[in-house]
Image (cartoon, rainbow, N blue to C red; front, side, top):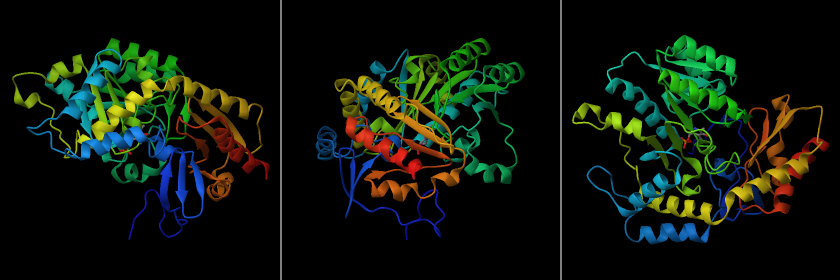
Length: 399
Ligand SMILES: *Cc1c(COP(=O)(O)O)cnc(C)c1O
Protein backbone atom coordinates (compact mmCIF):
# COMPACT_ATOMS: atom_id res chain seq x y z
CA UNK A 1 0.00 0.00 0.00
CA UNK A 2 1.42 3.36 -1.01
CA UNK A 3 1.09 6.26 1.42
CA UNK A 4 1.01 9.43 -0.72
CA UNK A 5 2.37 12.85 0.37
CA UNK A 6 0.34 15.74 1.76
CA UNK A 7 -2.93 13.87 1.18
CA UNK A 8 -5.80 12.61 3.22
CA UNK A 9 -5.67 9.03 1.96
CA UNK A 10 -9.36 8.49 2.68
CA UNK A 11 -10.61 11.24 0.38
CA UNK A 12 -7.85 11.78 -2.16
CA UNK A 13 -8.79 11.29 -5.82
CA UNK A 14 -6.82 8.53 -7.56
CA UNK A 15 -3.49 9.88 -8.87
CA UNK A 16 -2.84 9.86 -12.63
CA UNK A 17 -0.72 6.88 -13.58
CA UNK A 18 2.30 7.98 -15.66
CA UNK A 19 3.54 5.38 -18.12
CA UNK A 20 5.99 7.51 -20.11
CA UNK A 21 7.31 11.07 -20.20
CA UNK A 22 9.15 13.07 -22.82
CA UNK A 23 9.90 16.78 -23.19
CA UNK A 24 7.26 18.72 -21.30
CA UNK A 25 4.73 15.89 -21.58
CA UNK A 26 3.57 13.24 -19.15
CA UNK A 27 1.81 10.27 -20.74
CA UNK A 28 -0.90 8.33 -18.94
CA UNK A 29 -2.55 5.27 -20.53
CA UNK A 30 -5.05 7.47 -22.31
CA UNK A 31 -3.88 11.08 -22.10
CA UNK A 32 -0.97 13.39 -22.83
CA UNK A 33 -0.43 16.17 -20.30
CA UNK A 34 1.79 19.24 -20.24
CA UNK A 35 3.54 19.11 -16.86
CA UNK A 36 2.92 22.68 -15.69
CA UNK A 37 4.46 21.83 -12.30
CA UNK A 38 7.78 20.45 -13.68
CA UNK A 39 7.55 17.65 -11.09
CA UNK A 40 7.74 19.96 -8.11
CA UNK A 41 9.69 22.61 -10.02
CA UNK A 42 12.67 20.44 -10.82
CA UNK A 43 12.38 19.18 -14.42
CA UNK A 44 13.69 22.32 -16.10
CA UNK A 45 14.92 20.65 -19.32
CA UNK A 46 11.94 18.32 -19.70
CA UNK A 47 11.74 14.54 -19.45
CA UNK A 48 13.82 11.94 -21.27
CA UNK A 49 16.40 14.51 -22.34
CA UNK A 50 18.93 12.71 -24.58
CA UNK A 51 21.99 14.43 -23.05
CA UNK A 52 20.85 13.83 -19.46
CA UNK A 53 19.95 10.22 -20.20
CA UNK A 54 23.38 9.75 -21.76
CA UNK A 55 25.13 11.27 -18.71
CA UNK A 56 23.45 8.76 -16.40
CA UNK A 57 23.80 5.75 -18.67
CA UNK A 58 27.52 6.27 -19.19
CA UNK A 59 28.08 6.66 -15.44
CA UNK A 60 25.95 3.66 -14.44
CA UNK A 61 28.20 1.49 -16.59
CA UNK A 62 31.14 2.50 -14.34
CA UNK A 63 29.49 2.68 -10.90
CA UNK A 64 26.29 4.20 -9.51
CA UNK A 65 27.40 5.08 -6.04
CA UNK A 66 30.29 5.01 -3.63
CA UNK A 67 30.31 6.59 -0.19
CA UNK A 68 32.35 9.73 0.46
CA UNK A 69 33.78 8.48 3.76
CA UNK A 70 37.34 7.77 2.62
CA UNK A 71 36.44 7.67 -1.09
CA UNK A 72 36.03 10.23 -3.85
CA UNK A 73 35.34 10.17 -7.59
CA UNK A 74 35.55 12.16 -10.78
CA UNK A 75 31.84 13.13 -11.30
CA UNK A 76 31.85 14.60 -7.77
CA UNK A 77 35.07 16.54 -8.37
CA UNK A 78 33.88 17.82 -11.73
CA UNK A 79 30.56 18.97 -10.32
CA UNK A 80 32.11 20.75 -7.36
CA UNK A 81 34.70 22.40 -9.66
CA UNK A 82 31.88 23.52 -11.94
CA UNK A 83 29.80 24.90 -9.06
CA UNK A 84 32.83 26.69 -7.63
CA UNK A 85 33.51 28.36 -10.98
CA UNK A 86 29.85 28.96 -11.80
CA UNK A 87 28.43 30.28 -8.52
CA UNK A 88 28.98 33.94 -7.61
CA UNK A 89 31.64 35.31 -5.27
CA UNK A 90 33.56 32.89 -3.07
CA UNK A 91 30.67 30.43 -2.73
CA UNK A 92 33.22 27.68 -3.28
CA UNK A 93 32.74 24.93 -0.67
CA UNK A 94 30.17 22.30 -1.65
CA UNK A 95 28.58 19.91 0.83
CA UNK A 96 26.29 17.46 -0.99
CA UNK A 97 23.22 15.70 0.36
CA UNK A 98 20.26 13.79 -0.94
CA UNK A 99 17.43 16.31 -0.58
CA UNK A 100 16.66 19.98 -0.18
CA UNK A 101 15.42 19.54 3.38
CA UNK A 102 18.65 17.88 4.44
CA UNK A 103 20.71 20.54 2.65
CA UNK A 104 18.86 23.24 4.65
CA UNK A 105 19.48 21.24 7.85
CA UNK A 106 23.18 21.22 6.95
CA UNK A 107 23.12 24.99 6.38
CA UNK A 108 21.49 25.55 9.79
CA UNK A 109 23.97 23.24 11.46
CA UNK A 110 26.83 25.08 9.76
CA UNK A 111 25.50 28.45 10.94
CA UNK A 112 25.14 27.29 14.54
CA UNK A 113 28.53 25.59 14.65
CA UNK A 114 30.21 28.52 12.90
CA UNK A 115 29.70 30.53 16.08
CA UNK A 116 30.32 27.65 18.49
CA UNK A 117 33.69 26.98 16.82
CA UNK A 118 34.51 30.64 17.48
CA UNK A 119 33.53 30.32 21.13
CA UNK A 120 30.26 32.25 20.76
CA UNK A 121 27.67 29.99 22.32
CA UNK A 122 24.78 32.43 22.75
CA UNK A 123 23.88 32.73 19.08
CA UNK A 124 21.23 30.03 19.02
CA UNK A 125 18.39 31.80 17.21
CA UNK A 126 17.35 31.65 13.55
CA UNK A 127 15.66 34.62 11.90
CA UNK A 128 13.23 33.51 9.17
CA UNK A 129 10.23 34.77 7.23
CA UNK A 130 6.53 34.38 7.84
CA UNK A 131 5.09 31.88 5.35
CA UNK A 132 8.55 30.42 4.84
CA UNK A 133 8.98 26.87 3.62
CA UNK A 134 12.35 25.17 4.03
CA UNK A 135 11.52 21.47 3.98
CA UNK A 136 9.76 18.70 5.85
CA UNK A 137 12.37 17.60 8.41
CA UNK A 138 11.97 18.78 12.00
CA UNK A 139 14.34 21.75 12.12
CA UNK A 140 13.27 22.94 8.67
CA UNK A 141 9.61 22.74 9.74
CA UNK A 142 10.51 24.78 12.80
CA UNK A 143 12.39 27.37 10.75
CA UNK A 144 9.54 27.40 8.26
CA UNK A 145 6.13 28.87 8.84
CA UNK A 146 3.92 26.55 6.84
CA UNK A 147 0.39 26.33 8.22
CA UNK A 148 0.31 22.62 7.43
CA UNK A 149 2.97 22.06 10.10
CA UNK A 150 1.49 24.23 12.81
CA UNK A 151 0.21 21.05 14.45
CA UNK A 152 3.86 20.32 15.26
CA UNK A 153 4.43 23.77 16.72
CA UNK A 154 1.22 23.40 18.70
CA UNK A 155 2.36 20.06 20.07
CA UNK A 156 5.80 21.33 21.08
CA UNK A 157 4.86 24.92 21.90
CA UNK A 158 6.34 27.93 20.12
CA UNK A 159 10.01 27.51 19.25
CA UNK A 160 12.41 29.54 21.38
CA UNK A 161 14.94 29.28 18.56
CA UNK A 162 13.14 30.84 15.60
CA UNK A 163 11.84 34.36 15.00
CA UNK A 164 9.51 34.94 12.05
CA UNK A 165 9.11 38.31 10.38
CA UNK A 166 7.18 39.59 7.36
CA UNK A 167 9.07 40.73 4.24
CA UNK A 168 9.10 44.34 5.37
CA UNK A 169 12.27 46.34 5.93
CA UNK A 170 10.96 47.91 9.14
CA UNK A 171 10.29 44.45 10.62
CA UNK A 172 13.74 43.32 9.51
CA UNK A 173 15.43 46.27 11.18
CA UNK A 174 13.42 45.81 14.35
CA UNK A 175 14.32 42.11 14.56
CA UNK A 176 18.03 42.83 14.15
CA UNK A 177 17.88 45.64 16.70
CA UNK A 178 16.23 43.36 19.25
CA UNK A 179 17.89 39.98 18.63
CA UNK A 180 21.21 40.56 16.87
CA UNK A 181 23.32 39.19 19.73
CA UNK A 182 21.38 35.91 19.70
CA UNK A 183 21.08 35.36 15.95
CA UNK A 184 23.33 32.95 14.10
CA UNK A 185 21.60 33.31 10.75
CA UNK A 186 18.88 34.84 8.67
CA UNK A 187 17.40 32.07 6.51
CA UNK A 188 15.33 33.13 3.48
CA UNK A 189 13.84 31.95 0.22
CA UNK A 190 15.00 34.95 -1.79
CA UNK A 191 12.48 36.98 -3.88
CA UNK A 192 10.00 34.11 -4.24
CA UNK A 193 8.50 32.14 -1.36
CA UNK A 194 7.25 28.96 -3.04
CA UNK A 195 5.34 26.46 -0.93
CA UNK A 196 4.19 29.21 1.45
CA UNK A 197 1.96 30.59 -1.32
CA UNK A 198 4.10 31.85 -4.25
CA UNK A 199 4.72 35.14 -2.48
CA UNK A 200 7.01 37.61 -4.24
CA UNK A 201 8.94 40.48 -2.75
CA UNK A 202 11.55 43.08 -3.52
CA UNK A 203 15.31 42.82 -3.89
CA UNK A 204 15.64 45.91 -1.66
CA UNK A 205 14.60 43.74 1.29
CA UNK A 206 17.49 41.35 0.63
CA UNK A 207 19.96 44.19 0.10
CA UNK A 208 18.99 45.58 3.50
CA UNK A 209 19.27 42.09 5.01
CA UNK A 210 22.80 41.76 3.61
CA UNK A 211 23.81 45.10 5.14
CA UNK A 212 22.33 44.19 8.55
CA UNK A 213 23.93 40.73 8.54
CA UNK A 214 27.29 42.39 7.81
CA UNK A 215 26.78 45.02 10.49
CA UNK A 216 25.87 42.49 13.18
CA UNK A 217 27.97 39.51 12.07
CA UNK A 218 24.98 37.27 11.28
CA UNK A 219 25.17 34.66 8.50
CA UNK A 220 22.83 35.14 5.55
CA UNK A 221 21.49 31.86 4.16
CA UNK A 222 19.63 31.72 0.84
CA UNK A 223 17.43 28.68 0.41
CA UNK A 224 17.40 28.62 -3.40
CA UNK A 225 16.12 25.04 -3.56
CA UNK A 226 13.12 26.41 -5.47
CA UNK A 227 14.38 29.74 -6.82
CA UNK A 228 17.75 28.53 -8.13
CA UNK A 229 18.48 27.74 -11.77
CA UNK A 230 16.49 30.59 -13.25
CA UNK A 231 13.03 30.31 -11.73
CA UNK A 232 12.89 33.98 -10.67
CA UNK A 233 14.37 35.18 -13.96
CA UNK A 234 17.77 35.45 -12.28
CA UNK A 235 20.15 32.53 -12.67
CA UNK A 236 20.37 32.62 -8.88
CA UNK A 237 19.16 35.44 -6.67
CA UNK A 238 22.63 35.00 -5.16
CA UNK A 239 23.94 36.67 -8.34
CA UNK A 240 22.30 39.90 -7.14
CA UNK A 241 22.87 39.69 -3.37
CA UNK A 242 25.63 37.38 -2.16
CA UNK A 243 24.64 35.13 0.78
CA UNK A 244 27.15 33.43 3.10
CA UNK A 245 25.57 30.02 2.55
CA UNK A 246 23.56 28.97 -0.52
CA UNK A 247 21.31 25.91 -0.66
CA UNK A 248 20.42 24.32 -4.01
CA UNK A 249 18.22 21.30 -4.75
CA UNK A 250 15.24 20.49 -6.95
CA UNK A 251 16.52 21.56 -10.42
CA UNK A 252 20.16 20.75 -9.51
CA UNK A 253 19.91 17.40 -11.32
CA UNK A 254 17.40 18.63 -13.89
CA UNK A 255 14.83 16.73 -11.84
CA UNK A 256 16.40 13.35 -12.59
CA UNK A 257 17.53 12.20 -9.13
CA UNK A 258 17.10 13.67 -5.68
CA UNK A 259 20.21 15.62 -4.79
CA UNK A 260 21.10 18.91 -3.14
CA UNK A 261 24.09 20.96 -2.13
CA UNK A 262 24.91 23.42 0.64
CA UNK A 263 27.55 25.85 -0.60
CA UNK A 264 29.56 27.95 1.85
CA UNK A 265 31.78 30.98 1.40
CA UNK A 266 35.40 30.89 2.44
CA UNK A 267 34.77 32.77 5.68
CA UNK A 268 32.39 29.99 6.79
CA UNK A 269 34.64 27.14 5.69
CA UNK A 270 37.66 28.71 7.38
CA UNK A 271 35.99 28.53 10.80
CA UNK A 272 35.69 24.73 10.45
CA UNK A 273 39.20 24.31 9.02
CA UNK A 274 41.50 23.70 11.98
CA UNK A 275 43.63 21.18 13.87
CA UNK A 276 40.77 20.63 16.30
CA UNK A 277 38.69 17.55 15.32
CA UNK A 278 35.67 18.92 17.19
CA UNK A 279 35.55 21.80 14.73
CA UNK A 280 34.69 19.45 11.84
CA UNK A 281 31.23 19.46 10.27
CA UNK A 282 29.52 16.38 11.67
CA UNK A 283 27.22 15.38 8.88
CA UNK A 284 27.34 12.74 6.16
CA UNK A 285 24.28 11.43 4.35
CA UNK A 286 24.78 7.91 3.01
CA UNK A 287 24.03 8.95 -0.56
CA UNK A 288 25.79 12.32 -0.60
CA UNK A 289 27.72 12.92 -3.81
CA UNK A 290 25.96 10.03 -5.57
CA UNK A 291 27.79 9.49 -8.86
CA UNK A 292 24.66 9.32 -11.04
CA UNK A 293 23.33 12.52 -9.44
CA UNK A 294 26.65 14.32 -9.89
CA UNK A 295 26.97 13.23 -13.53
CA UNK A 296 23.47 14.35 -14.44
CA UNK A 297 23.79 17.61 -12.44
CA UNK A 298 26.95 18.54 -14.29
CA UNK A 299 25.31 17.89 -17.65
CA UNK A 300 22.21 19.80 -16.56
CA UNK A 301 24.32 22.87 -15.72
CA UNK A 302 26.04 22.63 -19.10
CA UNK A 303 22.64 22.55 -20.82
CA UNK A 304 21.60 25.61 -18.82
CA UNK A 305 24.66 27.48 -20.08
CA UNK A 306 24.52 26.25 -23.68
CA UNK A 307 20.78 26.78 -24.03
CA UNK A 308 20.74 30.49 -23.16
CA UNK A 309 18.14 29.72 -20.51
CA UNK A 310 17.89 33.22 -19.04
CA UNK A 311 16.65 34.48 -22.41
CA UNK A 312 14.17 31.59 -22.58
CA UNK A 313 12.91 32.37 -19.09
CA UNK A 314 12.55 36.08 -19.93
CA UNK A 315 10.44 34.99 -22.91
CA UNK A 316 8.27 32.75 -20.71
CA UNK A 317 7.75 35.73 -18.40
CA UNK A 318 6.84 38.16 -21.20
CA UNK A 319 4.41 35.71 -22.86
CA UNK A 320 2.81 35.05 -19.47
CA UNK A 321 2.42 38.79 -18.81
CA UNK A 322 0.96 39.38 -22.25
CA UNK A 323 -1.54 36.50 -21.96
CA UNK A 324 -2.74 37.59 -18.53
CA UNK A 325 -2.77 41.32 -19.21
CA UNK A 326 -6.07 42.76 -18.02
CA UNK A 327 -7.39 39.35 -16.93
CA UNK A 328 -9.56 39.72 -13.85
CA UNK A 329 -12.29 37.92 -12.02
CA UNK A 330 -14.07 38.79 -8.79
CA UNK A 331 -12.83 35.50 -7.29
CA UNK A 332 -9.18 36.44 -7.87
CA UNK A 333 -7.23 38.32 -5.21
CA UNK A 334 -4.02 38.86 -7.16
CA UNK A 335 -2.03 37.63 -10.14
CA UNK A 336 1.74 37.42 -9.56
CA UNK A 337 4.37 36.75 -12.20
CA UNK A 338 8.13 36.44 -11.77
CA UNK A 339 10.44 34.74 -14.28
CA UNK A 340 9.20 31.20 -14.83
CA UNK A 341 6.54 31.36 -12.14
CA UNK A 342 2.95 32.53 -12.41
CA UNK A 343 0.43 32.41 -9.59
CA UNK A 344 -3.24 33.31 -9.69
CA UNK A 345 -4.20 33.72 -6.05
CA UNK A 346 -7.88 33.13 -5.42
CA UNK A 347 -9.65 34.83 -2.54
CA UNK A 348 -10.94 31.46 -1.40
CA UNK A 349 -9.24 28.06 -1.78
CA UNK A 350 -12.66 26.53 -2.60
CA UNK A 351 -12.60 28.42 -5.92
CA UNK A 352 -9.89 26.03 -7.14
CA UNK A 353 -11.61 22.81 -6.13
CA UNK A 354 -11.96 20.56 -9.19
CA UNK A 355 -9.29 22.40 -11.19
CA UNK A 356 -6.94 19.43 -11.42
CA UNK A 357 -9.54 17.31 -13.24
CA UNK A 358 -10.60 20.30 -15.39
CA UNK A 359 -6.96 20.81 -16.47
CA UNK A 360 -6.49 17.07 -17.05
CA UNK A 361 -9.35 17.13 -19.53
CA UNK A 362 -7.58 19.98 -21.35
CA UNK A 363 -4.20 18.24 -21.52
CA UNK A 364 -2.51 20.00 -18.61
CA UNK A 365 -1.23 18.57 -15.34
CA UNK A 366 -1.66 21.07 -12.53
CA UNK A 367 -1.72 20.86 -8.77
CA UNK A 368 -3.15 23.92 -7.06
CA UNK A 369 -2.39 24.30 -3.35
CA UNK A 370 -3.73 26.61 -0.65
CA UNK A 371 -5.51 29.29 -2.70
CA UNK A 372 -2.83 29.29 -5.42
CA UNK A 373 -3.36 28.29 -9.01
CA UNK A 374 0.15 28.36 -10.39
CA UNK A 375 2.46 27.16 -13.12
CA UNK A 376 6.21 26.58 -13.06
CA UNK A 377 6.78 25.12 -16.50
CA UNK A 378 9.87 23.39 -17.91
CA UNK A 379 11.98 26.05 -19.65
CA UNK A 380 11.85 24.19 -22.98
CA UNK A 381 8.13 24.91 -23.37
CA UNK A 382 7.06 26.49 -26.67
CA UNK A 383 4.92 29.61 -26.92
CA UNK A 384 1.78 27.74 -28.02
CA UNK A 385 2.18 25.16 -25.24
CA UNK A 386 2.59 27.92 -22.65
CA UNK A 387 -0.52 29.63 -23.99
CA UNK A 388 -2.38 26.32 -23.60
CA UNK A 389 -1.39 26.25 -19.90
CA UNK A 390 -2.49 29.85 -19.33
CA UNK A 391 -5.69 29.50 -21.40
CA UNK A 392 -6.64 26.53 -19.24
CA UNK A 393 -6.28 28.69 -16.14
CA UNK A 394 -8.34 31.46 -17.71
CA UNK A 395 -11.01 29.02 -18.91
CA UNK A 396 -11.56 27.84 -15.32
CA UNK A 397 -12.68 31.31 -14.33
CA UNK A 398 -14.75 31.76 -17.49
CA UNK A 399 -17.19 28.95 -16.63
C1 LIG B 1 11.24 21.83 -1.93
C2 LIG B 1 11.93 22.77 -1.02
C3 LIG B 1 12.74 22.30 0.03
C4 LIG B 1 12.85 20.84 0.39
O1 LIG B 1 13.43 20.08 -0.61
P1 LIG B 1 13.21 18.47 -0.59
O2 LIG B 1 14.14 17.99 -1.67
O3 LIG B 1 11.77 18.25 -0.89
O4 LIG B 1 13.59 17.99 0.76
C5 LIG B 1 13.42 23.22 0.80
N1 LIG B 1 13.32 24.54 0.55
C6 LIG B 1 12.56 25.03 -0.45
C7 LIG B 1 12.51 26.50 -0.68
C8 LIG B 1 11.84 24.16 -1.27
O5 LIG B 1 11.05 24.65 -2.23
